[in-house]
Structures are given as structure tokens and as C-alpha cells.
Amino acid sequence: MHGNSSVLPGGHTFCRAMAAMLMASGMLAACQSAPEPTEMSRTTLQTAPADLQLLCANAVAGAAKMDSSKILPVGSRALDAESFNVELNANGKRFNCIVDNKGVVRSVQAV
Image 1 (cartoon, helix red, strand yellow):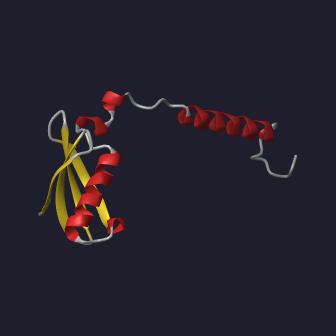
Image 2: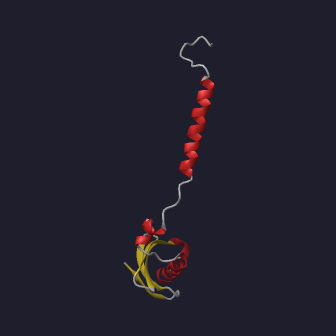
């Protein structure tokens, strides 16, 4: 004995077993499956694809006479089956852009 009466015989084995159980439970938690696409919050509102958002950023850059790297898309939503509204921030000034799913920018307006 180690001079400590609270040490259980085989205490090291108990600690190893507990450590193994904790590691196994951590591995199981890491193996959880991703939610179904219908359960993801992003699917409740269809957003514009990134390439269409970038087309709007370029269109706003031309309208605002700014470098397109200063234009940031901050939101988007589907208007109908063929077009999207993209909200953009141009160095603090807000713009709306309507673009169709073929990449044609229909309008750019300062808000």
C-alpha cells in the first residue's frame, strides 16, 4: 500500500477503465450523423448561389463607382423560381440587386 487508506486495490486499473469509457463516449458523440437537409435552417429560405451574389457585387461596384472587393453580400432570398434579391453593403451604403438564375442582373438600387 502507499500509506493512503483511500486508495483502492487496483485503483490504476479503475482509472484506466474510466478513461477508456470517457474516450469511447467522446468518440460516439463525434460520430453523430448530420441532420437531414429538410431539418437544416438554411433550407427554409432559399439563398442565392455564391456566383450570382458575386455578379451582383460587380454590378453594385459599377453603380457605386467602387472597387468590387469593397462590396459585401449580406443577405439574399429567392423572389420566385427564377430570380433572387441580393442585399449588399458597399462600404456602409446598402444596395439591393435582383439577378436571375441565368446570371442576368435585372436591377441595382441604393436603399
